[in-house]
Structures are given as C-alpha cells and as structure tokens.
Image 1 (cartoon, rainbow, N blue to C red):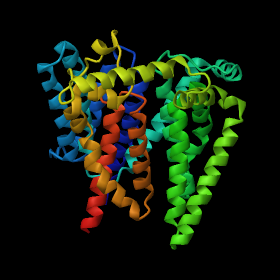
Image 2 (cartoon, rainbow, N blue to C red):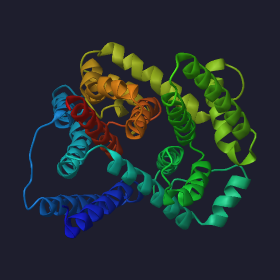
Image 3 (cartoon, helix red, strand yellow):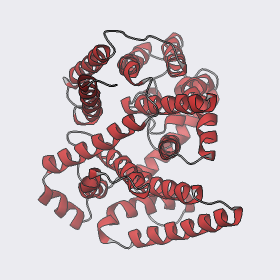
Length: 400
C-alpha cells in the first residue's frame, strides 16, 4: 500500500514539474531564468530519488537514443559549419535542455501513461495565462482586443502565451467530453482570453484543430458500425465548419482571423498579405536554395544567419534544419517522431483519452514546425518525453 509520504512527494513533484514548465516561458528572457530551470530540475530529481528509497534507475531508452542522435549530429556539424561558434552555442542549449529532461524523465519513466505530464502541461498553460493577465492588466487587454490589436512581446513571446493557453484548453475539453469533471474548467476563460489577446495564428490553429480532432476521435470511437462512423465524421466536419464561420464573425477574434486571412492570401495571390507572411515566404525560398546547394550536411546547425544576412533564423523548423543540417539533420531530429509514429497511430484503434491527446499534440507539433523553429525549444523535448512515455504504456498493454 502506498504510504502517505510517498503520495505527498508524488503530488509535490507534479506541482514542481508544472512550475518547471512555466519557467520555460515566464523566465525565458531573464538571464537568471536558466538557474530557476536548473534548480527545479535538481529538486525534482532529488525528490524522485527519495521517493524511490534513494535508488535511481538508470536505463537508456528510445527517448534517450533518438534525442542523443540529433545532439551528436548537431555538434558534429561544427566540422563543416560556416562559423562553428554558432553551432556550439545552439547545440549547447539543446544539450543543457536534454540533460535536464533526462533527470526529470527518471522519475516519470515508469508511469502507467502520460496522464500526469499532460496535466502538468494543462496547469502550466493556465498559470502562464493568469500571470499574463496580471502582467499586462485586464483593462489593457480588453482595450487592445476592442481596438483590434494584440499584446506586445514583453516578458516572453506572445505566441508562446497563446499556444500554451490553447494546449491547456484542449486538455480541459478532453476531460469534459470524457466525463471527467475538472476544476480546470474555471480557468478556461482567462486562457481563452489570452489566446485572443495574443493574436497568434499558431494558437488559433492549435485550439481549433485540437478541439476538432479530440471531439472527432471521441465521437468515432463510440461508433460500432462503419456507416455510423462515416455519418459521425461528416456531422463533426459540418459542425466544425459552422463553428469556424461563427468564430470568424465574432469581433473579438478579428485580429487573429485577419492575420490568418492574409496568410491564405499568400497562397491565393489575392488580397493583402502582411509583412510577417511575406518575410516567412522569403525565408522558405532562401532556405531551400541553400538546401539544394548543400543537401546532405547543410552549412552547420545554427548558421542560418549567414543565409538571411542578420542574426535570426528561418522561422520554419523543416527549412531551418534542411538548410543548416541537410537531409542528415532532418533524419536525426525527426527520428523521435518516426520512432513514436507507428505505435501511437496503432494505439488509436482502441479509443483511449490519453493516447488521443498524445496523437493530437503529436500532429500539432509537426504542423507548428512549419511556422516555428522548434529544435532548440525546451517544450519540444518535453513533448518528446510525453510521446515516448505513452508509447511505453501502449507497448506494456500489448505485451499483457
């Protein structure tokens, strides 16, 4: 029987893991933020060791192998990089992130599934949303939304705030439709407010696709006949289209819907296109040009500034890695996704709430990589940890 002290430590570790996730965003621009991140890592690892009777189970698993593969390749690209100092700087960030992830993983590695880590994601998103409302001020946020504007990048990138809030809303939505009453529903309003206030296209896409996919899989999962499955799929699609049309007509969503429309105009060739979309299109063009010149190995991880002409990156993970790491870079980084893909998809044959959420986030991460550079982001490797843990859970079930 589990001791009261063990249960207390478990809850404390989950709470600290949530704050650890919050630190990824809230302290991202602070020079001392990395010490908060490192300090929480040490405390989580230490508490896990205490919880396990001062024993630490060390094992090399697919999570370690796939991420180390990219880490080694990234450092190796120093040898042919235009300027190796940028490669070392970028990959050192990845190395520091992975070391901390490995320490935290030792505690969660024997979990039944990824439920606790997903709860950490949910609560972290709500904490960041509430902190953002406190930081900017509710009156300021309301006036910006009313004027059709978005909040500025101050304590962190506003896209990160909106995206975290969107992921939290998806998890809460899943709990509700699966009949798990959750107090997190109370925090849905401030989270939705920050999705709107961020004006983030990425957050909007995450929220719409995530809710649609979770609801669709839940509806289809309850079907017993092929005809019923098809009918429910069509009905969910119709409801989804009507919901998007309704949202498009709400004035509060105007900043983000206008930005989405301008992105679509880039592809249709009609209407106004915003500067951000045009710049991203140019990044894709010059990134692909570089890839065709050095298709196998690229020009060295972290060296995209030499393509662009200034100290920034290509704002598209696929293009960034193709240009800087070539085909070998793409294969090594996305090996984590490839390793999890088959098992997660096969796990969808039998409806399971946690597997559905993992697949939803799996797809969204791949989709977001068209709009952001994620290979050095801390939350990327946290999601890898979630995916690999759920794969372990599914393998354990199939073996039994």
